Length: 177
Image 1 (cartoon, rainbow, N blue to C red):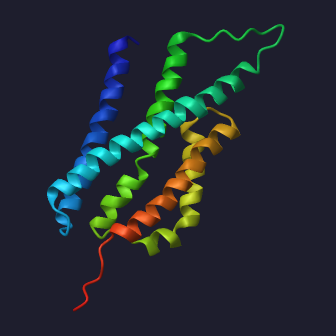
Image 2 (tube, rainbow, N blue to C red):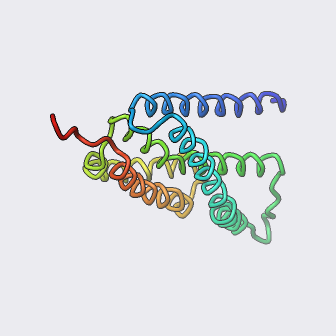
Image 3 (tube, rainbow, N blue to C red):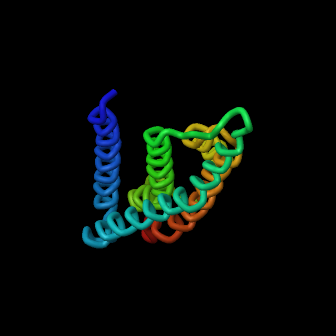
């Protein structure tokens, strides 16, 4: 595999994320109540800030812990000698995974503005969300339980923030209807 193929994979991911943001933006614009500039501001600043929080969490908390975990397997007979390409690949995947996972409140904001979810629905589905959080933790992190919990924990915390956002910004039933 040459370098261009790896870049192509990351560009497909970026294009998918951009398209998903556009779809959410169109749903929110159709939701009325907020004008287009407010929704655009929430989309740009909120999504960027949350991605940076997720990437920072991966960089400062998860990756150092995972690196220490991998290095702990070194013995007198087996020396820990990681390759830079595989190390950077793991690091990049973790940064992107945590950055994307931290977009959950932004997605809930758009879905609530469009009237597709309510805070009551999110509360009722909390058990399923917990299961999904741990499955995502198992799929997106290195193969150890602590990394899985380090991803599932923030997912659940962000799910709680999403419930609050859906309550604050969700569509209200019409008083006259």
